[in-house]
Image (cartoon, rainbow, N blue to C red; front, top):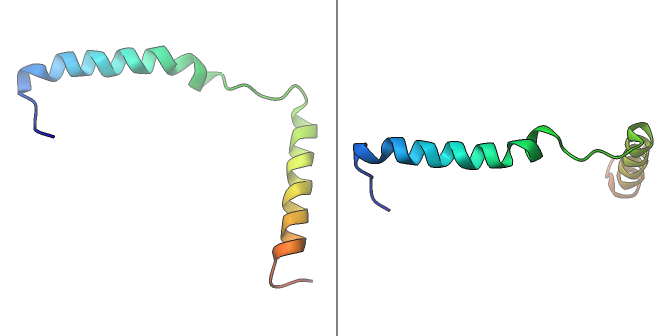
Length: 59
């Protein structure tokens, strides 16, 4: 890699802006499950199960 001349800065900046704008919709609106509470409950159950099976310090 080598440094770009200062005159390239606007073009590079425009390119970065274009890429960010292109992907902005996917970043701003992630696909969430229809039933968020159920998804969280499932996640917590899996974490609890993992901790119970793998935790060195069991209660």
